[in-house]
Image (cartoon, rainbow over all chains, first blue to last red; front, side, top):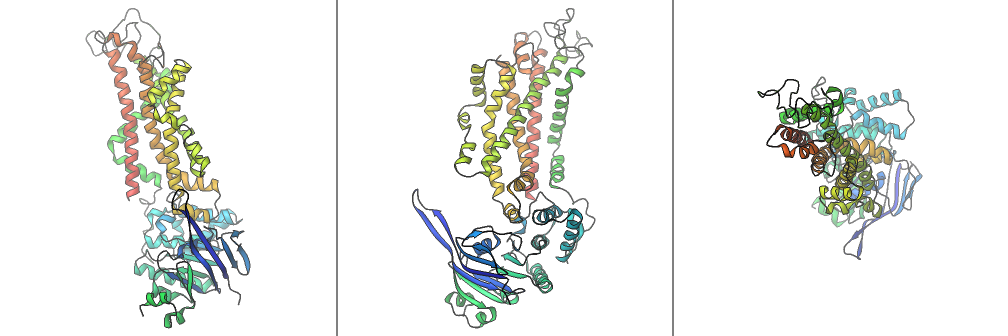
Length: 253
Length: 297
């Protein structure tokens, strides 16, 4: 089976200014490669500052990579850092939904904007699609008129999910999206994510600190340390027989 | 699924109506708003409402005190000045100059400030710096002094005063609006909106402006109170509006010699100036507090 998302030798460097004339280069991603099949979940774990969030941003198109390739269903969308993409096949869900939703727009307006920017649907088709998507993530069509401040944290994460799903993406990148939720709501959202995966063969890239969540959700695992992939493979195998020092530390073996 | 209250119309409110609810709870601010609306109406309709013309002289009624005084005449409710002109009519028409022109000056400043500040905010580097610091030199001089300098070059007159005030207020506007825009552009939801495929214009008009326009109104009220004081001060110094224009500051200066003989000709324009600045500041302050309260919830 062809992998839905394939990343080859992805690198990213940030330039920082450390003096008037001195500039430092920080390599945040070094030669990252992985591939995910449709309907699978790839978990990315690693300590703070290991490049997890940068990887998410590069995948979603918020940052440009310096070199490397991102292939979606075999089509190149980023070639050596130059992206020629439509950004709606890989969607990013942010860590904090209270900050990633515009407080000045209603949920419906926001979802409508997504559709308007990326599709050629008519107004009635868009309304139908919004209603469908809201019900898919467990919200009601009444929520069309609601503003973000009227939802609780868990509900907001559902809205964020609706926003990601409304464009029928192939890959959803969850950048710590479940960390800010309390356990019971997190369980709800995880079950919702797994249900959606079963229904539509979605692929998740799960970026998290949460090891039990990784164990529960993912098929493949990528361990990052200082921008390098120190371990990559099947999730169960790594959990049973960790090879790298970092993974052993994380599992405390 | 968590519980929803389906028919919670009370909480189903836009950010604007939540702001209004917070604002409404502040009675002083509401009083200020009513005074503000009253003054605005007066400024636009004064010539129609005033009982007499501003230059209409009544030679048999010189320096009449207000009507509640024993010597007063009910035909001249607030009395007359030394030329027999009705003080009430002159004060009403004065609102058009002092208050109305201040609103015009503050509006023009805000419009230019928003345009330049936004351009400075969405650009980066050198271009942004030039736009941002375009008029910074004027920040080194107090606005009233700057207005006096500009009038020294252009000559005294009401319109020159307005230009001077606009120029003096503009740099602060550009700075505060640029800061607002930059702060807003760095927020997560703008990044998310960009990933939704929004263009720069869409980000600006759907993402940034709906979230900062209340702040722009607050900045506008600050500019307005400065503009009222500056126009009146310049009128008082005989650099702005010239007699017989009924600008309140000019009226004060014109009647200063009569302060012992006919204190109402000086006191009433002063009281109106005080009320208009007070109303503007109450509205601005109430709005700022309501914004803070909304942000806190």
